[in-house]
Image 1: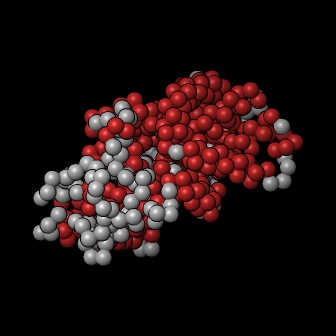
Image 2 (image 1 turned 60 degrees about the vertical axis):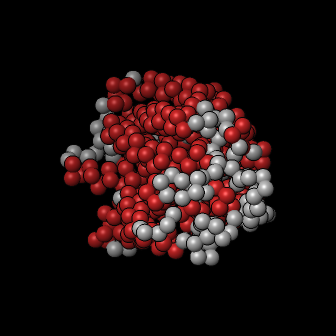
Image 3 (image 1 turned 90 degrees about the vertical axis):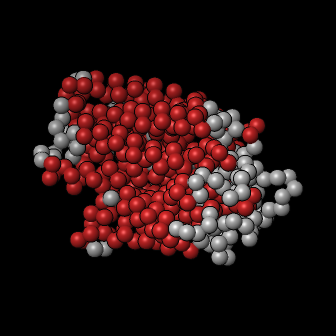
Length: 470
């Protein structure tokens, strides 16, 4: 097999339908992200309201504090594995996710997994923007109650926050990196202050952590635990696919791997503990779990504290939204037509679709959030991860011909630019993962949607590609 190259040669022709500056391999002199960059990236992406709601949703569903924290930690340790595996190609070759996936799906077929990943990101973008708009509305209720009471003010706040996100997107990737670097330590400090304040109101950690869960036997616990664990994995299964979008800027494999291993499990577990403890404290104070932090802050009529907490929510939401929910779909939409769709244009498309997906319904309650949204889309993304990892490590042995990823009739042309084996494997994995939605007796498959889809698609792909020259 020919030796892989790490960048396009200056005199090498490429297909303008497969290449633009945003999709091009990152040259070595621009690969400047070190361990701190990736650790702070994960801290900033983890310290967000969806993480808080992830943990608080488990409490609202009936878990006690240590069951919820254990489920979240286990889920993040599991998802770290495909995260690091897919990150390898981004660092080695400097290529983003939609280019990397051309190796397995073909130069045209890559649009299928890229669009599936992008649509999920659009949904997340909408959810985060809705949360940010609610925070602005709550801030108005504290600072200017008469303005907040005006008809349609919640929608004005929603679109105001949407415009702020669009501005950051238009500024580009380095603005995103800057936000992550300065935002992470500030948001962690504010989260810890909120934890200290509300547990004091509840009488300390003793009453908070002694609140029992509703599950008394293993038979009662497992039916809620299994889909919840899948939801935890599904939470970051999005970034597990497009992590090359970030690791293409890494100084080394060690830098990105160590930074991610230090940042992801620790940050998710710590901030999840804050969500668990604060929600448990709400049970002590109000007699019921309040899983929405914006609604919880609204119950405390102390303007100064509420205003500071809501500003922190806005910072966290903006940081996570632009990093986790915009970089990937912007590149994915650009991949559809590189000549006409730049990173910024892809970001605008993401913002519009995020509104059209009606995020206010996706987070209407903890059930629709965890077992509906998170578990449901994990059945789409698990199969893609299985194919990508099987192709890169088992079929190609980590060797890619980068030039051929940007031109037709090369190594990754397959048949008319589409690898039918990859498409067949993807459909097989999605079918098995989601069949439980319509066949009650197979509901357990849906509970394990990400795992089932990953294993089925990866296994089928290896079998179909066996004997094919890669």
